[in-house]
Image (cartoon, rainbow, N blue to C red; front, side, top):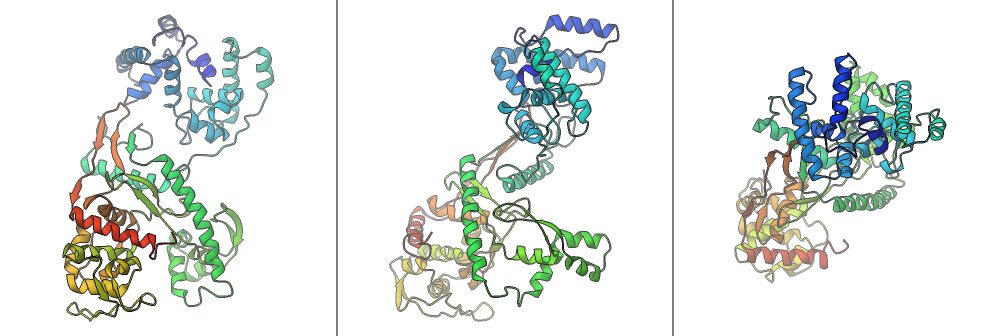
Length: 538
């Protein structure tokens, strides 16, 4: 790739210091006699790619001024970087079309390989595209692309990067594309990237952050540098763990329904699933009647469905695909450093291609027993000891509408038990007892301070009858590990333009919620959940 680029764009690249005066004067001569030629060195082109907001100027006088700026920047680049670093940076800043930015992405998109494994014809094809991304696109204009490829290889022969024999052997070879257009579904952390992009867009709109000319930034094409807290290795481990574990759980779940109809009394849920589907919405937009839509959903058709072994092409009724997806277990997870608030891993769902909705921050679910520590925290703040023994019997709380008497989720532990053991084994009766002592207003207020909004002050919140996101729950639990200090989860650190100018930045803001002593007691109690309680098998 490098040899092809030098041969076609800048034959004296290794000899000049950013500006090729010999070539410049030659080009001026050609232009004066009407033969238009480009005279920018690779270093100058890199300078344009890195530091020009408006791209190549078309106005002659503006272009002249821009050219002088390119020269200054090019010389500075040559003084601070090696030739290898300069050409590597250049190859990582160019657009190859089809959302392929940089040589690594281009090699994958067009040939399903890596830059170091590109053949000479493949490398020449990509280099040739720099003369015109659309005109010489191997997907849109294959004949032109092949001709341009051969021109690049001929120039490589002229520069002694390729022998005549090699050229003769390679010039007739087909393009041999393995086209795989880059999509938002590809790559690591797709759910995180979708949330991040939406956040940046909203921040720019709310804060009026625009380009110097007042136009909005194109987040895909304007070369913005986005700095996040995500840890690449931890993200990979999280995604791999999800696939490995969910594959087993899904098989166990399906097996548990053998011989039974899981949808016997679920007609309403299936109907809701149909109406939420893209297929239903599309048919509605086409003006189809309910009867026509029903017939469509009961007609076998070719579909691609998600499985944990990969996508499967099959023929089935769309209504059956709704039932199939209703049987799929879903999960999401987020990992955070409780001290800094930095999010380290974010898995928003089981497959972004098929299920775009992020379940870390966008989705909320009833939190259930994970809310119990909030009631215990208020109790500990009010002097209750983990060693306090209370009767594990039904409790009724009055004064908030209908009397509330929660049931046990299973067979309750008999007799009286300590608060430590009650939390470890998730005993509903003891949690209700504590709620009766401290009151729902205090518990609701604590949850709000720990980053969970909209927790109504009713007794039932002790057992988690409110909805919250994983994002907010992880942040709340981080308070215990961070010695009583709540730090809102942070994943976006700053955004810079392609020149390194900071457009937006933020830092985590710690907020004391409970004392260090209370946080310590709660952390010790929560350890009991996983060392001998309901979370032991984890």
